[in-house]
Length: 292
Image 1: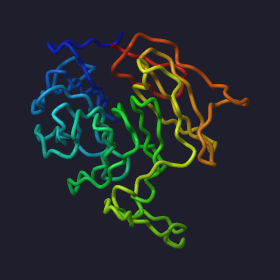
Image 2: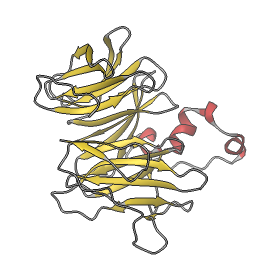
Image 3: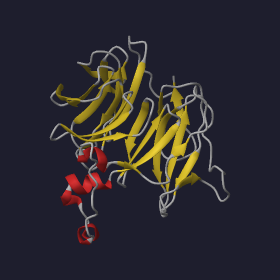
């Protein structure tokens, strides 16, 4: 063990590394977010504006910002240099499980117990898309590192991959490639019920709904995207609360299948570990570390 941090809160709900500094954010059950220097082992700052447990936390890759989501149904964007909350994003109707900044675009993705995934523009402070389809709590959601995809996992025992390319093309036209500019625009169907266009721009991709083989007591807790270098495949790791998880392959034909040369064969399974509420996994080395 490199460093041990102690706090008076009886539960740590979320963790995040800073992309370049030796810092760790810890979101706590008592509503406090702590900023630690893990080399010095010192507490640098406390951020206390949430009413209730803070479950999700994430640093921005370039800006001096981090985002949090909690049981008060609020997403808060903070500036750690100014040591204060800049603004709150309101819209979720239940606990917020995870939050994440997009690596390139001014977006935040959030997963909630209200059974939705929401994408927010943190520059305009507006919700730009609501992804619906899960029929139970959405435990986690995250952006793909390179592609226009969102990954989500729910207590409905499914893992879903969402295509948000239409959202990017509609809201961020300056990101269009020459090939996308030359391609004719596909017609967008607007439902008669009057549902918002933004809510329809994020859609579940065909043939990529992954049914997780687990009981009601072992839903997927955390998900991770891996892009295989030198290949055209992406990998999807799902972890359940009982430990262990399959590694799946996403092919160029947009089908997710168990990774391996034979049908239904997995590339690898993460070694079992005790029940956990927060999982973090780095590069696809086949190992994961979890703490309860």
